[in-house]
Length: 100
Image (cartoon, rainbow, N blue to C red; front, top):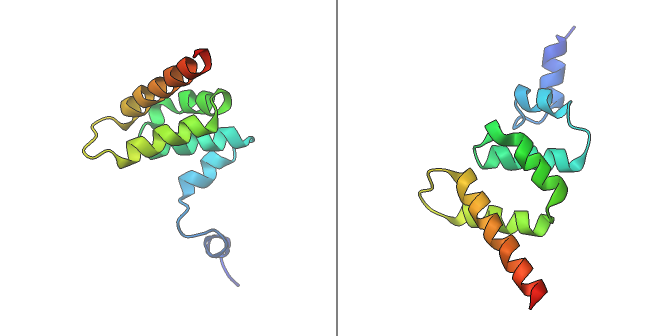
């Protein structure tokens, strides 16, 4: 007879931690998952609600562009601040393009 924990550990991918599975049970929409993953990638889980809101209301292309900008930047102290700065620039550039 096997322990339940052993069976579960074999069925869950090894890269998922227990905390990931516990958090995912509260996520019901795709944008929530995207926002949460974005907050984790930027090491800014304290503001995960902000990233979920952005994932819901902001075009995904802008978010991806800002995220790749942060990923490519070396020696960043605050990835969240850099992400928000770049996102603001992208949104302003889009407004100017629509006006002109």
